[in-house]
Length: 391
Ligand SMILES: *Cc1c(COP(=O)(O)O)cnc(C)c1O
Image (tube, rainbow, N blue to C red; front, side, top):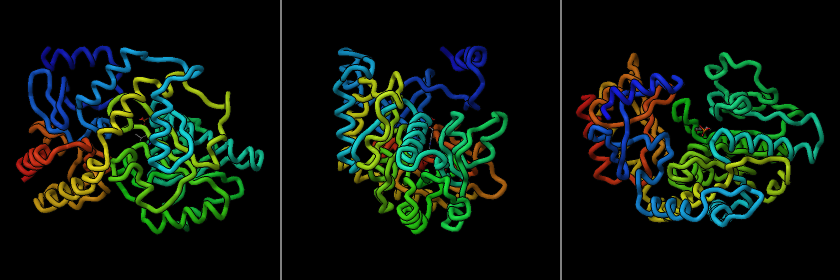
């Protein structure tokens, strides 16, 4: 089927909630993708950080197929092995105590919000349910996670929002200004992704952890984008020297299938008991098998290369000194690139795409989230397209 026919059908029958680029992706191999008519693209997006082990890794494909051939879904009223196996693996590698699984990033943050409020209710009773989040944050598109999101642009149209969130400037003073006796927790992204790839200051994060301990607030980290190796460690908090009470994850966990969840420490592991939280698809055996295969592929060796790959890309891009681009920022393979004043990140992304390189935008920046398994050859091909397009 040619692209115009594919597009016309979508335009007619799919709600126009996405400003799509005029490209269809038909199949791929690691970080190289092809459209139905055979055009090749180097993928610096991994489907917004989801295809963490690239496209169609044979180990991932085999694990998904094998589990689908055994049992594709069973309700959480029964046991299936992949769910428990994945929970054990994640807890061991993260130093956490227990997991809850759901299906997306927004849902994982819904779970972390409910966990925080229930924990505080159990200990202090009513009236201590407010969660502090940061200006510039992004926590999802459901009503509660939009309420938690500290960016006004996301708050048009959908009033009324939920009470119980206050937004702080990402400084200790900023947090103190919105603190109060009604607060139970702080929820942060350590690198604010959607607003433009802004890493939080390490001293701020450590100060925040101390403040949480002092005020008996839970420290919650949204690792939906930064988690599962994206920044070079399983979770980004492991590089900030903090021990959160709970962490949410999704995007990259299952290498392309929908899976999200939270991990909680010993203090919070039993807060959500039977009947307090649930989701039909949570812990689906095929998604959990996909996640186990993803973690197998992201072994210590692969994980150890992520920081170097990120450095390699950032150095190469800065060395090109392209007039359209500025400095780079980020950690591991989560990279933001400044756009020169007056330039449009969407326009740049469009030109790169025309020449066979897929990149993302975030806030005012260009954002790169390549598969963590991207090869040097694929990085070099992508860099060559970048240079040729923007020189
Ligand atoms: C993408 C993202 C979400 C939302 O995840 P969905 O799977 O789209 O619901 C939440 N928090 C952060 C930090 C994200 O990057």
